[in-house]
Length: 171
Image (tube, rainbow, N blue to C red; front, side):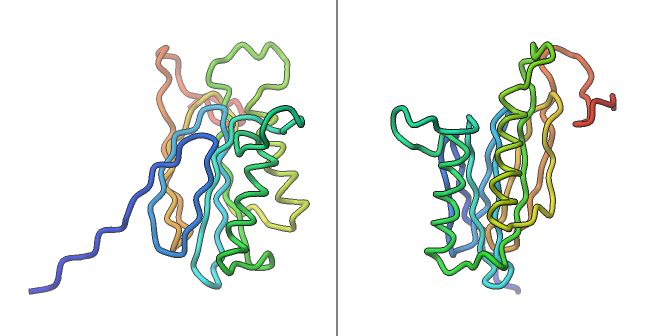
């Protein structure tokens, strides 16, 4: 008889939080206009993830991971503190949907969040190897911190309208 498989510990990542761990975890979160950046170091098989709501901290109040620039800084620091190196890191980016509509030609919160993720990762020299961003849908992701694998599902709209692909094409 084979021994039972060990269950991978799970963690739910709330908005405005960062998670990085040397142990294997399956980290899940749900995204609307928020963005999550998953970083993975294949050299030591370790990953981390953030979940931010707004693009940039403007200096008012506390510099929390509610803001993309702070969330990226805290995630990178957590990864480096656990032995990751910038040269090996790769990123996967999710979210930034216009889930409430009403953009009327203006740049949406989700679009600003996506732009900040791309800019900060480019500035850090970290390649984006996968992403699913934009459109008008929410997403649920599950990130395995040991393998770097991300499972993603698009959430159905509650108003019954068909889901669109991130480039605007209907499904």
